[in-house]
Amino acid sequence: MSGRPPIRHFAIVTFRKTDRFRFLSHLDINRAIDRAVRRAGLPVKYSEGYNPSARIGYTSALPVGGAGERELCQIELERPMGADEVHRAMAPQLPEKLGIVGVETISSEKRKHISGHTRAEYEIELRPAPETTMEDLRGAVGELLDAGSLEVVRETKSRVRKVDIRPGLHELSVLEPRTADAGPRLQMTLALQQDRLAKPSEVIECLERRLSSENGREVRLDVRVVTRLGLSS
Image (cartoon, rainbow, N blue to C red):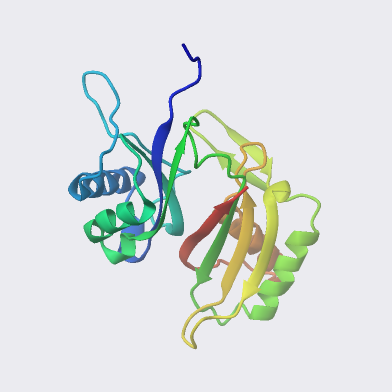
C-alpha cells in the first residue's frame, strides 16, 4: 500500500477587483466567487462535516476600497479540467470589473499553490494637489529611499508599537498623471512577510511627514485609489 498523498486537482484563477467592486469586503468577494463556481457547474470539492463548504482559498485579502488587477484564488476540483474549460465556464458568471484574468490548472500532491508570495506591487493614484508638485514628491521619495529607518506607529487590538518599515520598502517611484486632470501616481513594491511587512498607507504617512518637514506646514496626500498590481516571490 502506497504512503504517498493522493493527487489533487486545482484551478488557479487570477481575477480583478476594480471600479465599484473594490468596495466589497473579502467576505463579499468570497461569496461572489463561490456563487460563480456553482453557477458555472464546476466539479468543486467540498470540505467534510456537518456544514460542508467549497474548498476555495485566497491570497492575502485586500482592504475594503483597495483595487486589485491580478488577485488569486485556488479552487480544488473533484477531477482534472483544462484551463480553457474552467475559464469558459466561470467568465460569464462574473461582471467585467470583477472578472477572470486567467486560469491555470494543476494536478499535484501539494495542497497549496498560491502561498509563499513575499512581495506585492502597488500603484497609488493621487488626486491633484497644486501645492505639492512632482518635484516635491520625487524629492520626498528620494529621501525615503535614502533613509536608514522609517518608523510608523502600528496599532492592533492588543497593543500599540513602533515599527521600522524601511526593510520592507523595496521600490518606490513617482509616475506622471495618466490624464491632464488626474493626479500623480506612486508605484511601490512592498514586503509581505510578517517581520518585514510594509503597508501602502504607512509609506504614504512617511511621505507626508517628509513633505511637511520640507514645506514647514502640514501636508496631506489625497489618495484616490490604491491598486495591487500583482504578487511575487
